[in-house]
Picture 1: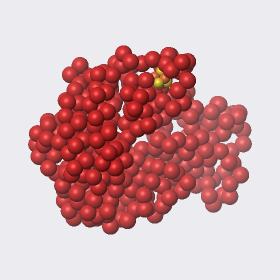
Picture 2: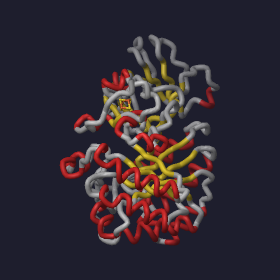
Picture 3: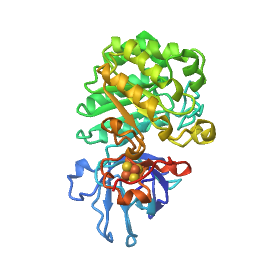
Picture 4: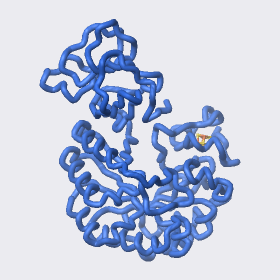
Length: 384
Ligand code: SF4
């Protein structure tokens, strides 16, 4: 089921607070009263009994009259909400935004929309405005999340622009969710400041990985893709500083017309100079944001880059580096690359097309982004 992580359609059924708030959903009415104040009770049947003391009440069906304060009727886009989810409710706008979904492995916090790169294929084009409220909400959400959560992503914009606040967020995650893996997507530039890289290392998070994109072995080509002069040098210095502080680093390379040509040289550069990295991901393009705007210039059918992709993957693999291919369907990949393909697309934007229904390898295949409808490979063909 596709999920709209932030959707309107919430309707107040009683007097409500005006200010947005963050709370965890429970479907258990019989909780001790002391445990109720930060919880929203989700009632599925026709509600007539409202145990007191909850932060509010979410109903799937309209209630009988006399609902208590902060009672809301959910809309059609909110049916996915479950016990353990952490949400932001905006009573005035009538929106519910899922900050954390308990039954998903694809939970990511957007911590800022600001960025100091301006990548030609950016899926989340930067906005230069004060969005500190995003982190305020996330800081409220973290203590409400189950400690059994497997992984949480942190993304932007550029999360490292938060500076000291990012460090404090990592401390909060370590304290409240010590068994939860944390994956930060960053352009790496701010870590060229050795003091900042040290501060992140000093958090000593037990399971932290920073994913950093590098798009070429040539500085000028990387700088062109990210539209920022000097970015290559800062990114590479950032990577080295993080590794010096024993922070795990993943390298990310997005394949499109501006990067594809030097993919084998890029792999040789990485295998020679950055062998100590923890993971390399070679990724297909997501057709949103600037990638969609620039699609005609950037698109290359994956079946047309299998030779350089194979060369790059095998170079990295031979160097002993953990290597993955993300965002590609099995049927467009050279069969020798299937063992590197991962199901990498977040569940809320992952779809399969009609021909997939008859494919015997559908369960192993990562499928498509919802946004792929605008352009798909001519190589899509089910395994019989
Ligand atoms: S036909 Fe669909 S499910 Fe099968 S490999 Fe291709 S994309 Fe994947």
